[in-house]
Image (cartoon, rainbow, N blue to C red; front, side, top):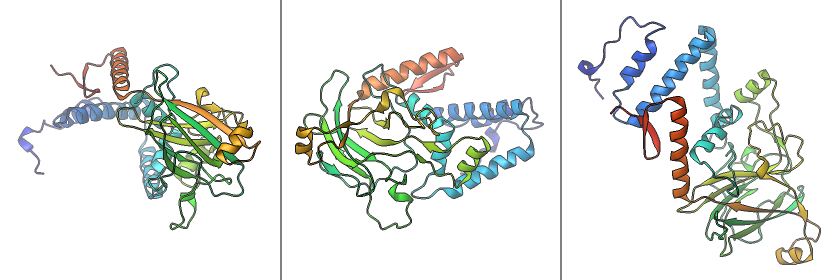
Length: 332
């Protein structure tokens, strides 16, 4: 693309005091109003950060080198940038903004984490086995999915994944040809129900052999996550839900390295009685987790997001309008 030199605003004699407004000015030529707004706010906050911290050239270069190392650590099975976003609290913040939830009974979201894949096998909705780990404590999971008004939701796609008994996800092992383990994709039945056999989740450290781990060390923060199972729920017409369930009483329940735990997502196992054992083919007395997930309609979620966006931006005194539910500059 050839630069349109005649249309560019003059950029000369830029200083601490005028560099921000001039950078925003030259970026304002973008035809996409959303891109223009995002870059305007990004530049404003980045420049204010540098001014407020009196950022040095050495620190600036250290930051660039750190981000370079984060990029080098990324692969098809490890997303170090997601990990960085997680430990800074950004992942949870963005999910909360983009997928707002009305008051209970709507199920709250949690962090995606860096180890979700699209290679999980598709399994029957009842009694499927997710984990082949013979060293784990057997666990039966019984779930049901409902709407806000309590109606069962059929045909919801449920993506589930967890670690093995040593706290590692299948993709963390070196053999790329190994079959997926500890993960699967199911669909809810006519009653909104689904079930699977897995192992009791364990607490584990997030990968801390890279730049994110080094940062945690500098901050004197531990890398551990409490025991949990990940879920993604998807169905046309319903807001996508990324969440996780956490075992109550885990030693890291109140200090999750990636800020994912919420009170409503804490669960306690019970024991399978004779009827449950016979129906699902498990041992009587085996541990069982039950949970009712409540999804929000896409239209309701969008309206809630727009309402909260307007309220938040009004509090900030921002002059914007919403286009497709997203704020853009209001230049009229």
